[in-house]
Image (cartoon, rainbow, N blue to C red):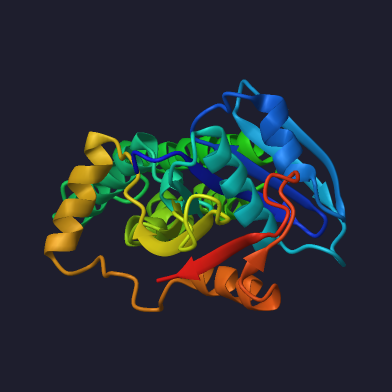
Length: 278
């Protein structure tokens, strides 16, 4: 994970955003004032226990990307105008040790079936099915607790239970694990953007400008997940992001809409803050 403070988009609906800060604001009231001082922004609440920020806004006035930029700049103000990283929802958090262990148990059960050491509906296959079910339930509980949403991937448990009823736990566990965790295991780390303050070109009295550059997010994986992805990467199964940085393009569109100057932010910069993209 980046050493700079970060703002992560956890959950978003039209008119409602939930963000998470990597570090608690030093001046909570000043931070909230900087974020909320704009037409169309409603209630802005900070929860210290989870370091989450709940923002309600009018969709006709603001976009998700603009609010992300404002929140990142408010964090920069709060941290002595230091750089701040904006991150999309980190998909890698889906992969926990429970999901990796369930996958390994599933692999062992499949090898046992292939080598005729274990028969259909064996205790090993049932154990693999139970392990996958527990991993999916753990993932669903985390989603409900952290994002206040029910993950659709929980529906795969229905297929798993049906497979158990038909005495086919290995097939059910394999399909459920692949649908719930397969793409997350093979997915490269999310790409974010860094918002870094730059000295004004007109001297000390010039307005502060902010340079926005793409960065590669390196989340802090558990040793088991890191080792598993290292093996898959060496086999060429994990590929880098070749589709570009969508978040950077969305923020660039915000800058173009505002003529590359973001207004407001609690009156700290009345003339607006110039945005520079690299």
